Structures are given as C-alpha cells and as structure tokens.
Amino acid sequence: MDGVLDRRGWLPCYLSGAVFAVCMAGTTLPTPLYGLYQEKFGFSELTVTVVYAVYAFGVIGVLLLAGDASDAVGRRPVLLWGLGCAAASAACFLCATALGWLYAGRLLSGLSAGLFTGAATAYVMELAPGKGSPRASFVATAANMGGLGCGPLLAGVLAQYAPWPLHLPFVVHLVLLAASAVLLLGLKDTVSERRPLSTVRPQRPGLPPQVRAVFRPAALASFVGFALFGVFTSVSPAFLSRFLDVENHAVSGLIVALAFFASIAGQSVVGLIGERRSLPLGCAALLGGLALLTAALWWHLLPLIVLSALLGGAGQGLAFRAALSQVAAASPSDRRAAVISTLFVVAYAGISLPVIGVGVLADHIGLQDAGLVFIASMAVLVTYAGVHLARQSAGPEHLKSA
Image (cartoon, rainbow, N blue to C red; front, side):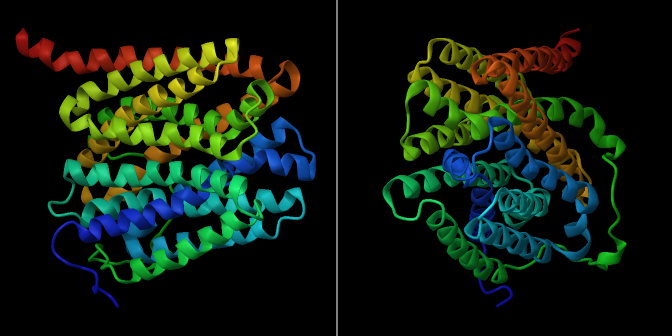
C-alpha cells in the first residue's frame, strides 16, 4: 500500500494530520470520566491529578529516551508504534477494575503521545507542498490541539447520552485507531536516509547552537500555556460538579474542549499577526484567561469559566504556533524532530508538575484555594514571559530605527 495515498497537493498532509488528531484524542478521552472513576474506586482529588500527570511523565520519558527515533528509522514506524501504545491504553481502560489499570492506561497513553508529538509534527510538515510552510505548521498544531479537544467532547457526549459510559468511548477510539493505521500505511515516509534503531540513544535536553536563541522564549511561553491546559483537563470537571452543580458529562467535556478549539483559532491568526508579535500577545491573552478563571473560582460563575477557556486557549494557540514555527524553521533538517521533541518536553513539564501541585494543595486547603494559588503562580510566569518576549520583539525594530 506504500504510496497509494501519496498524491500531489495537500491530501497527504491532511491525512497525516487526521492520524495525529486521532492519537491525541485518546490522551484526553478520560477527562470527563474522572468523576465516574472517583465514584467507582473512591480516590481523592490528589489521585486524579497524579493519574493525569502519569501521562505527562510517559511523554517526557519517551521524548528523552527516543525523541529522535523517527529521524533515524523513519516517521511511519514510530507513528505505528504510537498507535499501538494508544490501542493498549484503550484496552487498559476497558479492563479497569482497580486504580492500577488507570495508571497503566495513562502511562501507555503518554508513551503514544511521546512517540507522536515530535515525529508526527515533523511528518505533517514534511508531507506538505513546500516543506515547512506556515500552513503546514498550522495543520500540525491544529491536529494536535484539535485531537486533544475532541477527546473530552467525544467521551462526555457518549458518557452522558449512550450506554456503558466507562467503556464505549474507548471502543470507539479503538475503531478510529484501526482506521488511522490503515491511512498511515498508505502514506509514504519522508526520511530518505535510514539508520538502525540501535543508533538511537537517550538524549539530554540539548539544542544545536543556532536554535538556542529562538528556543528559550518559545519554551517559556509553551510551559505556561500547557500548564493552563493541564489544570483545565484534570480538575475543572470536579470544580464544575462541586461548586457549579454541573453534573452533565457532555457539558464538562465541552468546556474542556473549548480551550483546545480556541487554541486552534488562536493559531489560525498567527499568519496575520506575525510570529514575533504572536508570542507576547499570546502571553497577554493567557494572563487575561487566568484573570477570568480567578473570577470564576471566586464567584462560582459558569460563564466566566467558559470565557477563561476561550481566552486562555486562544492565547495558548497564539504563543504555541509561533513558538513551534520559529523552532522548526531554525532547526537543521536532520535534527528537526529531536528539537521539536525537546520543546514538547518543556511543554509537558508544564502540563504535569503544576497539576500535581494543585492536587497536593487541594487535599490541604481545598480545590478552590488550590486553584487560586496555581493562578497566582502562573500569572507571575506568564507576566515575566510576556515582558521578556515583548522586549525581544521590539529589539530588532529599535536597533533598526537607531
């Protein structure tokens, strides 16, 4: 089947993006189901955040151990391994009779995302006409965030309106994974010079010298944006249920999904605004989203939760697409997947460590106060990032005018 779907134009790029989205949807599929798992297994809010964060540790582990594997053995083999891990994750959730199954499922989900993030991003961009074009980077990041958004939406709707709420979402995902594998087998690989898997070595987070100046501000903005997403996807359903009496799983899934869909909207305007301006503007929007989330936690208002998801998600999209485009463009072709993987290491540190902190605090001071502490901490980081990026963005113009 190799190359059957390889046609001129954007079709291969879009198909690989669809495969990317399906895999990433599995990583957020359990989000609106955590309340049901809490009732079934009787664990605390801290356990919810640890179960969630196990996924991120799986991602980081793969990125550090084999972040450049697709540069050596090819994109398709690595992505097929990722689909296999995603299928194993769904099987764990289907068989879940104790908490250990959830940990195993989340770890396997993290392994699948770790295999996909760098390799699939590079693959989508390389399959596009005119490799590395802004449109190609948008397809890659939109597939990533769109998949993350579709996961909780799909699971929430099925859990609320269909039978077997803790099983049917994962059956549907297994079907989608099988279809994705068929699509992937029909696409060509983009790595022409292959090396044996034995040449892949664990890598410390490191960067080629020409990437470092671009990478630092991009990584800082990515950390903050993913931290906001981490809290939304791990504890917002519990807050909605406990303080706003929102028991509808579809509504909880939709609110989480809105943040990811808003990210796609933010990404779509980067070409109009420009990458250098998008990074500081994204940080400003993230700060606005944090402010709205503070008000929502304080006054227990559902509309403010929705607005914070929209504004914060848009800010994350602005910052993340600009960051990814700049880092990919500055990377040498034979290190592109490895450098992109390093960026995702930083991002997934943001999606895991602050979330565990919220869980620890929630067991001592309550979920609402823990959320406020998180917001204050992220506000400091995003303000620093925004000021730093704004100065950097203004630097060349200032020098030019001088």
